[in-house]
Structure formats: structure tokens, C-alpha cells
Length: 439
Ligand SMILES: Cc1ncc(COP(=O)(O)O)c(C=O)c1O
Image (cartoon, rainbow, N blue to C red; front, top):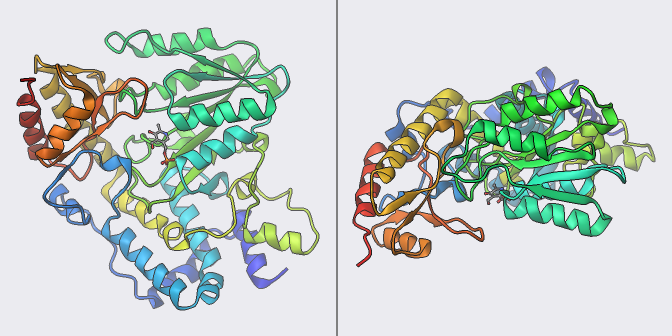
């Protein structure tokens, strides 16, 4: 095994992810003259880290991240290195940088780095996972009618290709009356002895509704207690609008797979994402795209099997990527860590609460997202009487406020207050919406 390959093997099997690789990573990073790390002081200062247009109130920032300074600097550094000497820089950095990214993601998630596969987006993770999860002839995939295009389409493609049974259920009757109990009860009733995979979305980008993932996981655990390992329900969560918003650790979530892009609320480089899998669940995942994990490749060159490598290695698709983006992802996790998870959650909740309370008080506005933070996170959906959602968004844009329309069959105007916003911006937005009365 080559030197590079041997190191890769150790890294991926988790044996060397800490001391040796990181020590050398750290010393080489210093040699690269990395700027001083970001220190959070206050929200105004945080906003200065983003090159977002100061003329606009950005309330659709979750759609695709603007890169904060540490992420941007890291991208620039890697891009310059790759442009100067692509193969030299790649051999010098591939292993070390991937280890750093996996370690930073693992630390942030409360996971082991060997349980994380790196992807380019939520959609790539969903497609690869749902396309390959092992399923018996009598087993079905249970999903909901509230999921995003990417979950629904990944499941449809799986069904068309393999004949897998996919059954969607409603989790609630109306947003006006939805409760955590109703959601958990609907799930319990929807599960049958054939249900093997459950595919849901933590925070719905269609309505802003947040599912009670912990309670759902507990209900599934109870059902799983009377099932064999090969029949137990595998709980898969699209967590893209929870990662970088909710204060959680995957080891407390009790789900089997968490799939998310890191280029929305996490502020990671555009074109990055991950799949975390519980060590007990990973073995039922089957890869589709050959990994370029160096140890898998090395084993292949030696005509040896790579089946003993962690499944997350195989679930990290090759070939080459936009490495300047992928290798800068650790900076996004560090950026969030510096602020602190609970502070992040609290700030996003506060701004969303302010927005929802303001909207709920307007007679010409229908707020669709539940008021309680138990059932909502960072996304607020609403309608303005007499105006189509697209018109609402256009009129707000004329006032330099950036909103979006939910990209679903049922459309709402959508605002997503995030860490880059201020209470004053929410007030300005509320005043603008108050003036949006149909002529
Ligand atoms: C719930 C949900 N899942 C998945 C996606 C797709 O994310 P990505 O761009 O990372 O593939 C989106 C929005 O883009 C979304 O709202």
C-alpha cells in the first residue's frame, strides 16, 4: 500500500483521525499562513462576515449560502493551490483536508467521523441513500405527502427502477390544528408490519412545519422492540432545514440516517452536503457511484476487497470534485461552533417569533406556519389577501426585501429570518407587508 493509501486507510477506519493526521494538518495549515480564526462577538459583527448586498434585507438566505469570511478564505486558498499545481496540491491535501472536514462535521454532529459520508447536496444524499437501501420483497418504504421534490422524486425513481413499494401518508389534517400528538399518532397508524424504511423531512420547506423528530423516533423505537433486526424500521430524515438551526446531536436523535446539504443554514461552501448514518444502519445502504476514497482505490489497485471499509466510505461518491469547496467545509462547522449551537437556535427562534407574531396580527395576512417553536424553526409561510405569493415576493423585492415562493404545488410566500438578520430588519419587513393591501 502506498504511503498515501496507508494513511487513508487509517483515517477512514478511524484509527488515526485524531492525533497524527490532525497534528500534521495543523502544522501544514500554519505553514499556509491561515488567517486568525473567527471569534463571535455580536450579531452585527457576524453580518460583516458575509459579502451580502447591504442594500437588501436577505430573508431567503437559507436557499443557498453566502460564504462567510473563513469559508471564503479557505476556498480561495485551496483554489489558488489547485490552480498552481493541481496534482501536487491534491496529493498534498486530499487526505488531510478530508479528515479535517469529517472531524469538524463529526464534532458538530456528535458523531463518529467514520459514520459520515460527504456529498454535494441534500439531493445527492437522498438519491444515493433511497436508491440503494436494501429492501425485502415484502417490505415497503413509508413516506409522507409533505416532503420536498428531492425526497419524493428519489423514492419514485427507486420504485420505478426496482418495483419497491412506496406509500405516502398525511401526518396531519390542518396546519391550524396540527399538534405533536397528532403527527406521532398518524405515524403510528401509518406503520404496518411491512414498513421497513421511513422517509420524512424534519422542517418542511412547504409550510415551515417542524416535525417532532424525537417523539417520532421514540414511537418507532417502541415498535422496533418487537421486531427482528432485519425488519426493524429504518428512520431516515432530510434534515437540511434543521442542520445549522436546531440544537441537536445525532447520538440523541435516535434516527438511522440524517441527510442534509451544508450549503444552506450551515453556511458551508455551495455544493457540499453529508449523510450521517447510525453504525447499525449503515450496512443496509448500498452505494451507486464509485468512491474515490484513497484507501478503497488503493485496495482496488492491489486487487484486494474493500468490503471491510466503513460503508460511509463507499457512500461518499467519487470521482473528483470542486475540491476548493469541499475542503473548506470544516470552516463552516467551526464558524457555527464558535457562535455556539444554543445561541444559534435561540437567535433564529427569536427573529422568527417576532416575524410570526407581527404577521398574525395583520388582518390581511394568513400565517400558515404554526406559532409554537415546538412545531416550527426558521421558515415562515404566509399569504396576503388579494395577492398571489409571487406578487407578494415581487412587491417585497421592490422594497429591497428578499423573500421566496414555496416551490410546491400549493404555493405560499416564504420568509426565513436567520443569523444574518436583525430585529430592525424584521420590523421593516413587517411594515412593508402591512402596506401590501390589495388595491
Ligand atoms: C426540504 C428540502 N430538502 C432538500 C432540498 C434540496 O437541497 P439541496 O439543494 O441541498 O439538494 C431542499 C431545498 O432546496 C429542501 O427544502
